[in-house]
Amino acid sequence: MPVTTRTWCLVAGLRASLLLLLLLAGSARLLAYNLTVAQDGSGDYRTVQAAVAAVPDGRTAVFTIYIKDGIYSEKVTVPASKPFVQLVGQSVANTILTWHDDNKTPDGRGGTLGTGGSGSIVVNATDFSALNLTFANSFGNGSQAVAVSLYADRAAFKNCRFMGNQDTLLTYESGGAVSRHYFRDCYIDGNVDFIFGNAIAIFDNCTIYAKARASNATSSYITAANTPATQAYGYLFRGATLPDNGATPYYLGRPWQNAARFSEAAGTLAHNKVVFLSARLGRQILPAGWALWDAGTDTTKILNAEYNSRDFGGRLIDVSQRVGWSRQLAPTDTVAYTLATLFGPGASRPGAPVAAWNPTALGPEFGTCQAPDLAVANLQAAAGPGQVTLRWNISWAMAGITCEVQRSLDNVHFTRVSRQKSRTDTQYNFVAIDARPVTGPRCYYRVVATKKSLAAHTTPSVLVALPARP
Image 1 (cartoon, rainbow, N blue to C red):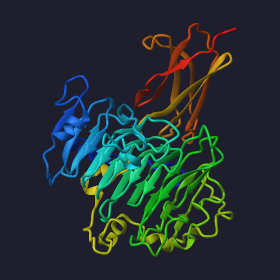
Image 2: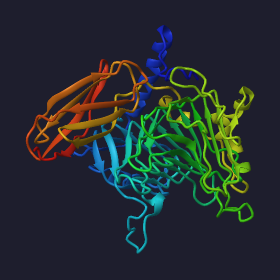
Image 3: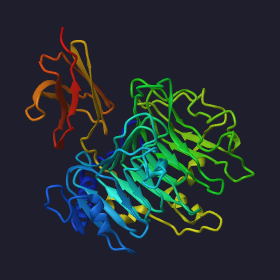
């Protein structure tokens, strides 16, 4: 997979026509929805959880729930009795499932939810899939707050966004069985250990956006795999893009549950496995590449590896300062890192055999690359003396994106403050300054992103309290 440009499956002539036919075939399949969710009452249900509850138990084929655009502020649980649930959003930028629990949120039984229980959506059923959705946890900084908690085998996501801070995406198993998870053309952001767990997971052509941290910004970590000793594979990133955030340096990962308080004898020590193949790395990745958990980390049990990592100019990354216990793979080493190998019977653990799983069989859209959607993320506004500074990023960078900042006093009528256009397909971060020629204690801002031939994206507005003028 090329690494000097993001792979959008741009083809010419007959190949383009064939791809279009495939996508149309996929769209036609997706029109056969079982249920529709719409906040305005035009569907079968107004909430996602109500629709999930209506799915018959014990399904053996996909049951599709179509979700119209809207911000669905609700906690969603897919129980183990409801396999083969598929959620399909109207558009990835505007169909948002969000909630705000953290690991300390009371569980109603005298305890707390814990990290996994904090998920805005918690999936306990096998054969779950989702397309064109944003999953978010809006708790903020300072605690573990998961957007998506996956606890069962065979979960697949296409063209989805996962947004949070610490511990955004949990890929896990329960009961000693193997869990296999697949992500294609997705966007995942966070600021501490935001892709973590013990599942076997493949991330194809995904954007991994490590956010700038407001505190403890000296460094942070992207992955935190705790691969079991009995499991041959952990995380595999193929053709990933890791944009620079312009502020906080990051390690590619650190080894969760490989620390002083875990032991091989007790069977609690993780054999952490994370591999990046043909990744495009921003300047925020520290030269060491990988970090220990603590002084008790057993590096002989770790496979942290890369192959063909390049910068955004297409040049090979200088890996001369990578930690000595990490690996740079040879081309022959990469042969085994295929979907068939990681998701085949070889993924079985002792006493827990699994059959081969091919997530691309869910439909053509899971087996083909997808042109990017226009989607703004992480709009923030900070008031200072005489001005307001706004920052945001694009989930999938493209040249020619116009971002218009708009301001309002009543959150209804907006006027333009500024406009800027991306010149390259490597610009993810944007900054705008408003000299604030307004009166009043507060105002609202939003960003409207447009690009020819793509649907525009208007962000939810953010409220800014304005300091009193002298």
